[in-house]
Length: 256
Image (cartoon, rainbow, N blue to C red; front, side):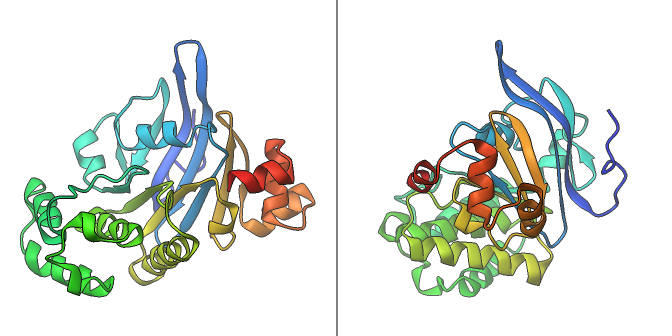
């Protein structure tokens, strides 16, 4: 299937007509989306919408039944090594070794990827994230928010073209959630980083450049927050989200 984004020179991530089923159960039904350099794009959906399945496909953990994924112009199916080399990801579940220091966690990642000049790069990133004083701290000694910052630093050390954030604020307090969103949005502006931020929390993405709303494997709407409000004749993105996904305000707020 041809898609208007196929030949767009600026898309850092292109997903075209992506289909995935588990046995007879459809998980994704012909998904299209794209993210450009410098964009903070939200993938918003309730639990069970298909967000995790999509991220598993994007990160090469599973293979789609059909459709195509291009990362920085590289087709994931034809050139998986080249495509995944341009991808950074922070998963929902923490993947730090809690017994290693912050520096050791980051050095281990650099060694795996054969990065040169890793110490200077790590020191600069820790300084930028306000973690210079935690270099020798064991990861388990950090707050949840600071652990996420270390994972964010690790995901960016190889200078990816696209950053995936998979429900990355789960378990964080409201202040830490807001800080992480703010830090990632700043990276979009300062470094022209392309970000796809998956969440079920509407308040995290009200200032996103564009929003895709996914439920039960189907893309229900996409556009700027203002465009989605117009499409749904809603007064807020929360109301639009609840209307599109068939939830009540009470259940939607409870999910958040």
